[in-house]
Each structure stands twice: as structure tokens, then as C-alpha cells.
Length: 505
Image (cartoon, rainbow, N blue to C red; front, side):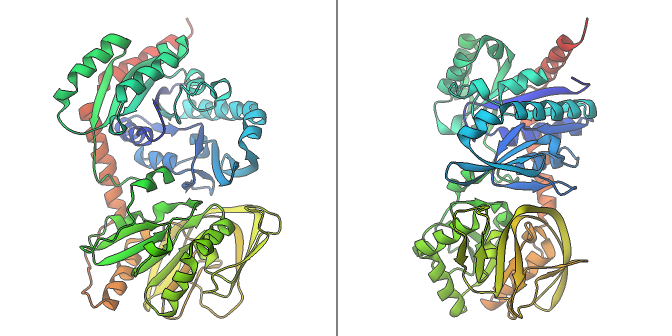
């Protein structure tokens, strides 16, 4: 297909750690001097990443490209599936919305189109890079789907990639899941597996050695590594499956309590990641009114279905509780993207772009009217904002279907070179913006948190973390960890072997 040597990582199930291990290999190969690209043919995720040319891909592939020291392109994730309502998803092709489709329709009508897209992207990457690190999805042993799958063994065959199978020991039954997966594979695909990695191990690996020996004898496949669990890894989560690990309980040892509304179609919740690294912040994801309590800051994050998530806020009682907190000036409120739209007065969806609801009154904290449009805005953004009478230069990215108009006299939040964004109250208590990644701007985040501290009678913290520096350190830490616990020599040799077999005689 090209000069690149591919390697593919598949899992026995979702959330086995494929994305993180692919990230590690992207950094490892790049450190070793190879021009490296990540690839995931088809990603289902509500956490998105915007490429430099304003296209939308899965966030994991964007982060993996960063780990490889390159700019992400849509070839690295040509098909993105974004669930937006029951049984229906938005299909994003090369970074732009293609069509809303139900699962059965997608499987029946999109298969040939998808295959062609995948092959074209793989071909382009293989002629541009030295290494391609490919990520699968779910499990290759989902036999009810394999006749038309677009993301596991069919991609491995297309790329002629050796495959490493990953099992997550933290969930239990790792040997059963690895053996069962291997036994359900077709002979050709079984032979493509060069070995397995056992991920997220805790404890003394010597206790695992009898099982490792048995596995290799029983299956004839090598154990290429046992990777110990690596805590506090500051790398973006793939999707909302990770939210189950977050707490809704208060932590009284932390001075700033941040409540994040976890509505059913929450998206790009990684906007709050920097707060997890702050010494004085405790972040809670809440789904019920009684969990809200008395936070210092409430964040309404992005949503893939703003109207239905707004309905959830009302039906759960969170909306009324939030309005009570606002009226009593008990906390700061910050809305991002869909959360910003909810802070306005009205939301219209005349063409049912996101929802069958054509109109809904919003929370009414800003005199804003949002109308959903068929064209999606996707772009990298930057501008100047004023907060607490201080100016800050900020960067972010935008992904939204709606257009929002200010019908009153509330001042905008961010001034860009050619437009304004967002809205804020005169006392800065309530702020809304379309800028994802707003809290990744260290200087603004520092001022924002210190303003909350001042309100609580606490001294400021000036030496806060640099989130971008922490990310780079996390990539390097992950690479060192994986190098130490995985047989890189065998993997490199198998990549060479597969490449040699594909060369013409």
C-alpha cells in the first residue's frame, strides 16, 4: 500500500485501553525518529477534535496526533459517528456532516461508501508516514456484526497490519476474554494476531506468571506485555464511558466545589479536564437535582442534542435549582457550546436538525435566541476577553449546529478579529461561550479560580499548573511506562515481517 509499516491494536471489549496504548506507541515511534500517524477508520464518540483546517474528528485521534508531534487530519479518522438521539447518529465524513442515520440504515447502505473512504485514507497515510498506529473498536469477535464491520479485522487486512489484542485485567476474566476472542476469529484473522497485552494490572506480576505461561501454551500466542495501571494520567478521555468513574460526592478537603451537569447527550466534557489537576478544585458530575447542593461553580458543558438535554434539566429539577442558585447569587455559572445555548431565552429547531422539538424556552439568564441550522460550525478560534477588569488572549475550538443572536444589552464575552462570541453578566457571575477549551487557557483559568477564592475569603494561588506542559509530560510518562513493560523488539520485528510479505517478488 505504501512505505509505512502499520501496527493495529484491538481489544476484547470497549474501554480495554486501546486509545491510550495507541497514544503511547505514537509517542514511542515519534521519539525513535519515525514519522508516525494514528488511524481509526470509524469512531463513535461525542468528544470531538478540530483539525487545523476546521474539520471534526474523534478526539482520541487528535490527541494521538499530538503525541506523535504532528497536525491531525481527517485521514486519521475519516468516519466519525456522533449519537444525537435514540437509535440515530450524525455521520461525519472527513470532518463534515454527511447525514443523520439509524444504525440499520447505516449498516445497510453505508458499507461500500465507508470501505472506499477507509481505503483512500489508509493509502494516503501510508505514502506520507513511516509508521501507522491503528486503533480498532469494541471487539473483533462481535460475530453478529463482522460481515459488514468497518473498524477491526477488515481494516487490518486492508492495511496488512499485524494485530496486538488487548485485555483489561481490571474488569476481571482477562484470560477468558482473550482466549474467547481468539477462538471466535476466522483462521486468517487468528493468524494475524502476533500476541496480546494485558492492561491495567495492579499488584505483583509474579502472581500472574502461571496464568501467562498457561495462556501461551494453550493459545500459541505470546504475551507481549503486562502493563501496570498508571494513575493520574493527564490525557483526554475517549468518550462518556469514562464518566462512570467520576464522583458526584462532595470532597470537603478541596476548597472549590465544581459541579458539572451530566446530561444524557453530554459532549466534549474534556473542557473541564484542567480542573482535575488544580490543587484546590473538586469536580463532581451530577445527574440529579439533590446532588447539586451549594457549589462554587456550575458548568453546563457541550451537548449533542441541546433541546433534549434542556428538557432533561427541567424534568430532573436541575434547571429550577440552578435558577434558585443564580437568584441568590450563590455560585458562578458557566455554559459552553450547548450549555451556552441553554443559558439563553429561546432555542428553535425548525428543521428538526437535532430533535423533534421545534422550540423550547431556555433558562432565560441571557437575552439570547439560538436557531439550529443544517450547517455545522467547526473551527479553531481565538480572541480577547475581559474578566474581572483584566484582558486575556484565549484560544479554543468551536463545534456547533446553531446560530445565537443577542437580543438584549448583555456584553459579549470574547472579541475576535471579525466577530464576537458569548455573553456575560456585568458582575461575571454567569458566562457563556462557544469556545471549547476555554479553561485550557492557563492565565484565564487562574484568574477565574482566584476570583472564586476571593469571594470565599481565600487567598489567591498564583503558581497554578500549566495544563499544556502537563499533557506533554503525560505523553512522555506514558511512553516510558509502555516501553518498560512491552516487548518492543518483537513488535518491531513483526511489523517488518508483515511488510516484507507484502512486497512483490
